[in-house]
Image 1 (cartoon, rainbow, N blue to C red):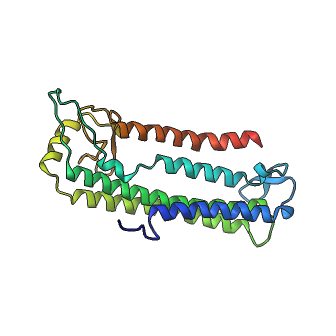
Image 2: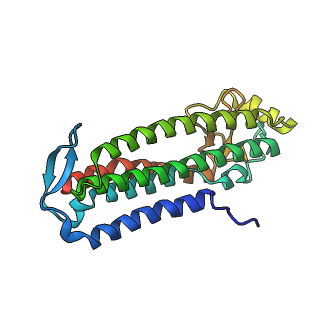
Image 3: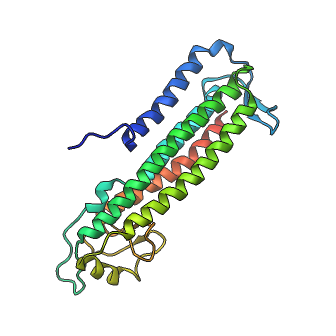
Length: 252
C-alpha cells in the first residue's frame, strides 16, 4: 500500500494538532507574562472590550474552541472507504439496484477532494487561531493587531478561492468518468429518491452515490449501515462545533 505523502489529509490533520499543541505549550511556558484579567474580545480597532480572570480556560479559550471545532469538522468528513462499502440486500424485492464500479470511483474521487480541502482548511484555521492567541493573550508589540486583520482577510480569500478551484476540478474529473451500465441503472432508479445530500434505499448495496444532475454533491444512503454510522458522526460533529464555543463561553 502506498504511504501517504506530506500533503495527504492525514499529515495535514497531524499538522493541525501540532499547531494547537505548540500553542498550548507556548502559553504555559509564558504563563507569567499573561496579564490578569486576560483579553476575551477585541473591537475593530484592536482595543480590548471584554476580559476575564486569568485561568487555564480563559487564557486558552481560543485554542480550546479551535481544537474542538477541528475535531467536530473532521468527524463530519466521510472516509473514502464509504465509496466501496457494500452490503447484502433483500433479494426478494422486485427492485434491484446494482453495484457500479464507475459510481464507486465517482464517489471516491469527490470524497478525496473533500477530505483534502477540509484538511487544508483545518491547518489554515489552526494557524489563524494561533495568531489570535498571540494577539489577544500576549500584549506584545511584536504581535500587532493589523497583522491579524491582514492574515484573516488573506485566510478568507484563500478559503473561497480554494473551494471554488477544488469544486470546479472535482466536477470536471467526475464528468470525465464515463458511467458503466450498472451506474446508468442506478441513476435511473435513484434520481427521484436522492435529495438534501441523502436518500433511503434498502435495495441499494452501496452507501453513497453521486448523481449526474449534481456532480459536486455526495448523496448518502441512510438505509445502509455505513450511511447510518456516517449520519451519527455528522450529528456528533455538528453538535461539537456548535456546543463547544457556547460551553466554553458560559464557563468563563
